[in-house]
Image (cartoon, rainbow, N blue to C red; front, top):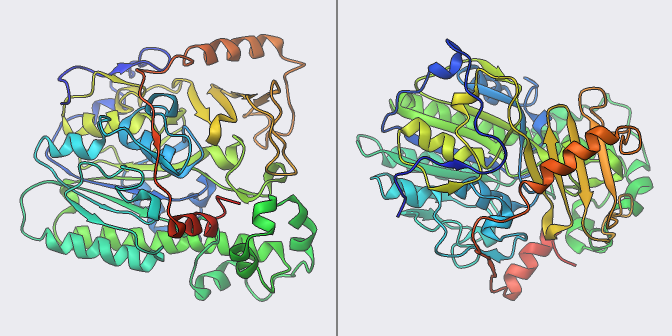
Length: 458
C-alpha cells in the first residue's frame, strides 16, 4: 500500500526551494486529472527542437514545460521504464536487462493511481513488456498487449480507440503509450524518409560500409540487420530514416492531443512525453545503438504539460527519469511512496541549480554522474561489444558539458579537483534502497527471436 508520507529524496541533496514568486508557484493545485505517459523508444533529445522533425511535440512544449537537460537513469528499455514507473534506480529495482522480471512487490505508478480510483491502461510495443515477461504493467486494468511490433500509426490508432471509449466517462484514467519506431531497425513511412533525405542531397556511396566494422559483431551477423540495410550504402540515409521515425511518432502524438481536445478531455489531462533512452548515430564511434553513457544516449526529450500550467517554459536544470513518478503524483495531489530516488520537479522550477543525476549502463558495465556542467563516467567491467568504444574496468572519463558538448576532451588528468568531487557524489548512491532484485524472465524461442530482431542478442 502506498504510504501517506512525503517522498524521501534519497538521491543527493534536499530539493532546492523555488525562488519566491517563481514559476513553481504555478500549477501546484492538485486535481483528478487524466494522465497520459508517452515513451518513445531510443528517441534522442535533439529529435525534439526542430519544427521540421517534430512540429506537434513543439506545439505540446509550447503548452507546457520543455526540459533541455533530462536524463534517463539507465540506457536499456525495460530497466529504464521500470525506473520511470517506480521512481527507483536500477540498483533499487534490480532490473539491468530487457529480460528482467520485476519483483511483484514493487509498487508502480499504475498501481498507485489504481488504488486512488484511476482507470489504468497501457499500450506496450515490445513482447518483453507484456506482463508475463517484465511484469512492468502490473496494476493495469486495460492492456493492449504486444503480439508483434507495431508501427506508429497502429499504436496511435489503439490510443485513439481507448480515448473514444472514455467519451462521457467521469472517472480519471492513466494511459501509458510506448512507441518503438526510433529503435533499430528504424521504421518510418517512405514519405517521411524522403522529407529527411531529399533526392537533391549528395549521397555518400560506401559510407555505411566504411563504418560497418564498428557495428557489434551480433549486428553485423544478424539477418534482421542485414535485411534492413540490404542495398543501402549511404550512412546518411540511415540517419534520415531515424529522423523520419521520430517524425512518425510526432504525428501520432499530434493526433492524440487533437483527439483529447475534440473529446473535451484536454483541460483535465496531465501529459508527459519522454524517451526511455537516446541513440548514438555515430558519436564516439558507436553506430545506431544506445551504448555508452554519452549525451547522445543518456539525454532524452522531456515535455510535461499540466492543466494548471505553466506554459511555454524552458527548464535548463538537470532532471532525471526517477523524478517523474514524484512529479506526476505531486501534480495530482496524491501521497508519495516513503522511499524513492527522485523528487517532484515543480518546487525546483525557480532554480537553475538542479540536483546531480545518476546514470547506469545495461549489465552494470559503467555508471556516471552529471553535476552542474560536468559529467563523470566510471567503467566497472572490461568488455568490448562496440569495437570503436571498448569498456575498460577502472577507466574514468570527465567532461565539461558546457565548454565541450560533444564530450571530446577528457579532463580526468587536468581537473583533479572536479574529479574528486564527482567521485564523492558517486558514493552517495552506492547503497541500494532495500534488497529487491529482479529475476530473469522466461524466454521462449519466439521472444528470443524478437530480441534478436532488435539487435539485443547474439
